[in-house]
Image 1 (tube, rainbow, N blue to C red):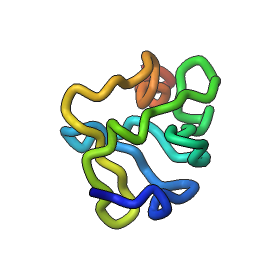
Image 2: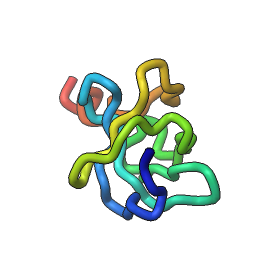
Image 3: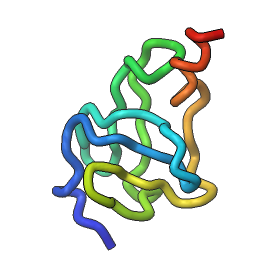
Length: 81
């Protein structure tokens, strides 16, 4: 089990396969608020702390099957297209 106090601003969030999902803006209650710069719609998105599998160095890994809001982690790919 991880401690939510270990989650800090600017940490990377990755899915269970290690692919970039977003960047932490802050932790609010039991949710991780992600930066707008990683979302295709330029809005903040939230992930549940229950979806966190582990924290490794400066990276947060989500559990398999974690609910990831549409458009996260895709902005860079969309801009390159």
